[in-house]
Image (cartoon, rainbow, N blue to C red; front, side, top):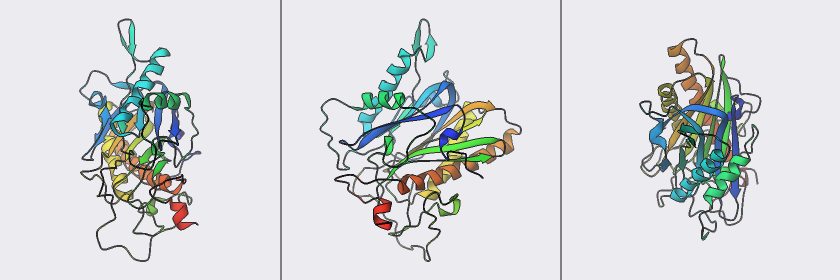
Length: 328
């Protein structure tokens, strides 16, 4: 599988990403959207999710397409980011038509970053504005690391972040974007090696390979505090139904399990959205969706490692970045 030209989820034509970060509170928002409504699904495997409007993504629901997906920090406060995005989209005339009104459909998910060293005495909830700012920032090019929903993210031993990757799967393009704030770790013990090493492309997260020895004891975790959750979006230009998007999200969770140890814990809200632009018809619905699921899982594993690799330091960080620890 060859990465796309940007090695970002936006290599899938039709989709753009916007980020907004507030360094003072060490948190932020990531918005994924398109010029036209798109089909989406979701699968949740963590025990502590925080979401908005995700019930609409079930294949049996009336609404079959959405206007944007939002990933946010801030725990439950961060769900307000979707309100900012919805307001801005409504002002543009976007949304599900109900009589004379347009109702933007903006499912969202949050991660917990409230005790990461930032100033959370904000008074008025900042996430609605951050959501609007992220929507205003959308582009096919965006930064990785300590930005957007990954601005203040952490893992068991290192600072987390926002990561992305893409790959060509036959005639289709697949990509992933992820905010990594895991209870577990993306790296093996205290060393520089990533669990996702077998899937690395072109040295995209340091070309460290495997360690000489593998750990035999319990993995490192943030078990002492409920400050976790890894939330992601996988996307493709293959024309998928809502049910097929849901299946793509299910398969993509394999990538999370390959890149984070442990993952899907009772204290993580781990979940994955899947999106389809519908640009390329499926040639073989069974074989194509099988390979798309494999590609999505592989892209997500790589994106998780890239999030950690690109994280940048800030004052009062509770944990070092990968570069601080392994490339001082």
